[in-house]
Length: 86
Image 1 (tube, rainbow, N blue to C red):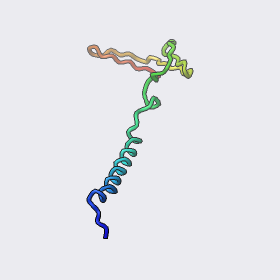
Image 2 (cartoon, one colour):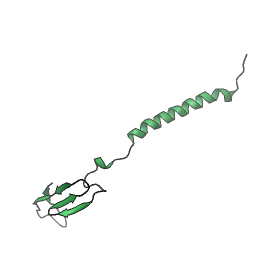
Image 3 (cartoon, helix red, strand yellow):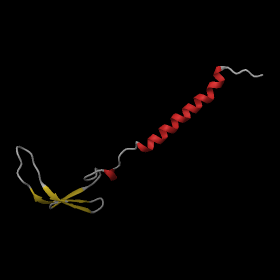
Image 4 (cartoon, one colour):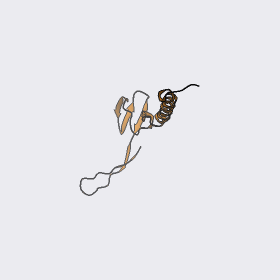
C-alpha cells in the first residue's frame, strides 16, 4: 500500500489551475489587442502631408484628401460649425 502526502496530490491540481489561467489569459489577449492605424479616423500619424488647395497630398501613398466647404452658418457664442464635402 502506497501512502501519499498532501504535497504530492497538490502538484497536479496546481498545474491544472495554472494551465486553466494561462488558457484564459491567452484567449483574452486576442480580444484585448490594441487599435491599429487601419481603424483610426483622419490622417495617419506617419503621413507626409503636402498642402494643396482645399486639402493635402499624402506623399507616402499619393492619396489626395480634399475638403470642399459647403456652408459655414453663424452660431451662438463662440461655437463654430462648418459643413464640408470630404
